[in-house]
Image (cartoon, rainbow, N blue to C red; front, side):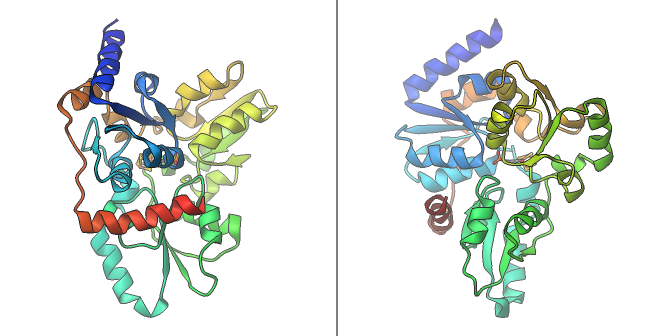
Length: 309
Ligand code: 13P
Ligand code: SF4
């Protein structure tokens, strides 16, 4: 009852503020239910690029809200919890990337950054990618320059497998996805031998090798819906369950090895709550702010991605 009242309050505030609510697939169910759009990083970037709302309430982590602000300098972008970070983004601080690029100037790297990075890093690289378009972006890189891929070594090695294009990889990782182990997937597969395994590319190679499909969170929905199998082991963050159970009714969705290890909640994604969403719409705060020089440079690499995908 309390959550229904809160949801109604949020929808009322959304109308008053002329706001749009964008939510990532990893947000808790009640947040997804009040959102105008729920999707992966690529879908969310596209929605942010095309919205005519005056305020964007971004239910995701900080780099996602930043991407919306990069594309919408004149709109207010608010986040329920400004402290909601990302271990991948943290693994590639802008000053360390600058140091590395300065020390390797002679290589003349073409730098591809996974969208899970700060605005400062986005401002420093040639193009952004997401898990949904990473192979396409790598294939569009100039053939005569070496590629540096930051910050996710696992997504990067998956892109190398997909494209055959060699890349130097920054050694970052997602603390949630690297917790899934080969042994835990083998154990759960023994108990569900007919299930297809669907894994996010942020998982390690050992886990990806056991997967029938490796894809972005959005593609997980269409894969489970369109594949004739009746049961799926989904190896990613727990928020995925909400849409999968609703949009793929009648099929069995087994959330990775959660029965064996409590590793599939992203503590950053789960910092957002309905209460904090209500408060950020009421107060129009906390707001994402980016220094204009950084924002304008970052916009070039984000727009290049949108043009290429
Ligand atoms: P997707 O773009 O596939 O939703 O991935 C975002 C993310 O942060 C995965 O951990
Ligand atoms: Fe970052 Fe991993 Fe959380 Fe995605 S799941 S937001 S990559 S820490």
